[in-house]
Length: 337
Image (cartoon, rainbow, N blue to C red; front, side, top):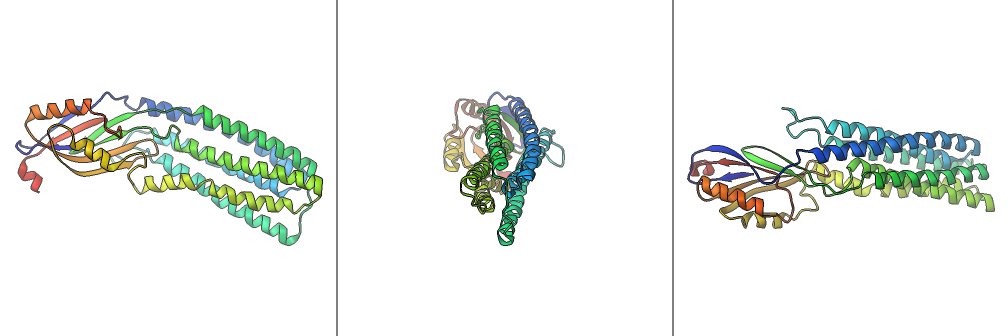
């Protein structure tokens, strides 16, 4: 945010808008998310082994594909853990915003893995139908699918209740234009959200496998196994749409959905001593952290600056994003340049 004084020579000053937490909440949130992801990764590994063994003895493609989904989840959990750790690295000269978007990239990679694997599984289901390779052991399939439903419910609970919470973290920084960023609006780390969607997809597929096992056991209709794989794999793809949409808007630096551009501009314009608001930009560094850049033309001298800061402290924008103000005072001739 740059505050422009039409009458003074160029100089820079830095003032706090409101007390900051120096990123402690974000770091704690990341560590909590990391612990949760490690927990579900261990659970996934245990169940993958059990499901591959069960699928082998049951000769069930549906169970094997479910195990494949779990394997992709395990890979995505590991990627997410690495992304969270990377995001905690301090900013550098080359990456002045830090590594916040490592989390977004990690979530994108995990979703891509799920899409690729699901496509492969759909092709395998079609191949099984074409080749009429349908023989399965319904009892083993039924037991394995039941265990799978239970495991996915447990993992979903761990992800949902183990990483929740709504927090705010305010970080400041600037150089000329100041950028204020924060406000945790999602409550959950984006990689935990992606992991939760993975688990929901696996739960859906496990339920489908369980239904297919019941159908095969009581009707003998073994075609239910590959059909189940095909149908529920398509559903899994649709469960990733919301995460992909959020990732797309972050990478495109779109105005965050939880913020009203016009409302923020009106709130800034309403501050005392502010004559005009120019070049307002709002974007997301990741799913939890919002950045703002704006040029404010304010009247008066340094007393006006102090009044402006006091007003900022008293004013709550309809989107709480201000963390630290960097005011660069410029002369009128510099504005025209």
